[in-house]
Amino acid sequence: MTEEHYSSTHPPLPPTTEDDRFSWLRLLRSRRVGVSTFHRLMAEHGSAQNALAALPEVAKQAGMEAYEICPAGVIEAELKAAKAASARLLCLGEADYPAILAELSDAPPVLWTIGDVSLFKRETISLVGARNASSLGTRMARALAHDLGAKGLVIVSGLARGVDTAAHLASLKTGTVAVMAGGVDVIYPSENTNLARDIAEQGLRVSEQPMGMQPMARHFPRRNRIISGLSRGVVVVEAASKSGSLITALDALDQGREVFAVPGHPFDGRAAGCNLLIRDGATLVRSAEDVLEALLQPTTKPMEQDSLPLALPAPPDTRNLHETAALHQQILDRLGPSPMGEDQLIRDLKSTARQVNPALTLLELDGMIHRQPGGMLSRIG
Image (tube, rainbow, N blue to C red):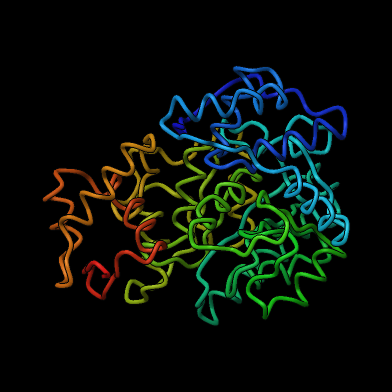
């Protein structure tokens, strides 16, 4: 099935019964049904029950024989795990679902939450940055989170090491939301177990992933779009020229959010991404006042997409299963045990980094290729 980019000004009607909620989860957890496919199936068939009935035939038309929808037992186990973790399910369109996130064309159909969902009713700002943040970076993150929180803003971040941790700690008392890459009941990194417990008690943890899901590399870019989508703007404190924080900034631009960046020394690699963002139009941040001033400007416009730094990757093009498999095979055919430069591979494929990089990531996760220092690639086996 093609995971097309589906956009509609009319989100699906929220489930009204427990059976409806069960069907929403079952559809979303079925193989090859991502967010875009979920929205498309709901628009075409009117309800999750109808979409589930049609799904095997849809899969067959896409070349997938003997397709089976997600077993009911899987959803029953997820609901049982949610009850044990005191997690609450929010579905798109329900009153407590965050309104600002619902505006997105790829809004998560469901969110698992642990904590105070009333935080979604307040003004929010996202704060992200390097996991290996410097002492100055963590100090800046703490100061921004504390001061913005004192002005009534809820701080959204990703519960990662470094800047995220500093931001959550400084905003526990004023309001903080942790968007998680794995299940809302799975704490990563483990060193933040106590912080995650405190956020559940005083703030809010949220995830679109199934209960119990261990976070994997491919989950983090999807998580980042929720971090930016929950807020009017994203503040980047420290970020390398190619990092997850810059992906979050890109998501913010795609979503029409403001982008803010804290400058750093040109010789510090952890500041390279922020300096690039500022060069290309992000609002320079020296203190919380810079963020507040920009948010209060009714005519303030976010950075233009065309001004993105070249190092910032664009979203991958969507492909159907046959096209994806063909690209994977083309990559594997060109790679061998001797390392090849990624740039050379892209030239040989007569393609672009935007098209090839997502495929390389999937092949690496599948253990079929190996990335080496200096942008070199080799095939495994």
